[in-house]
Amino acid sequence: MKRNISTADRIIRFIVAVILGILYFNHTLTGTWGIMLLIIGIVLFLTALVNFCPLYRILGISTCRVKQSN
Image (cartoon, rainbow, N blue to C red; front, side):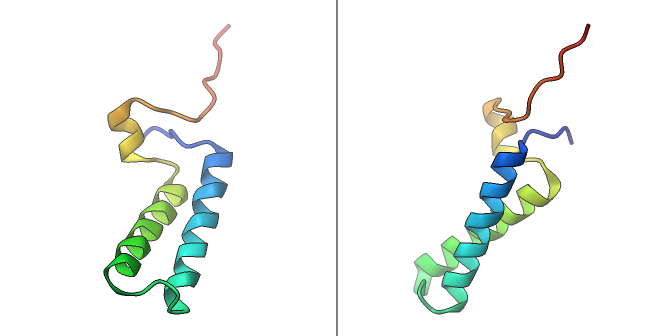
């Protein structure tokens, strides 16, 4: 898998995932919406962990800097 997530994108994903996890386990997010947002948080955490987002790949997006060849 080719890396397609920048460092800033990765940090934002970690922060959002942690916030969603905290809100779910503090019972602020409950029911179906809570479960869906928890799953989104898990996906964000995992994509940040492996530096690869399958949705970015499908859409042809990359937030990583492209190295210039001389």
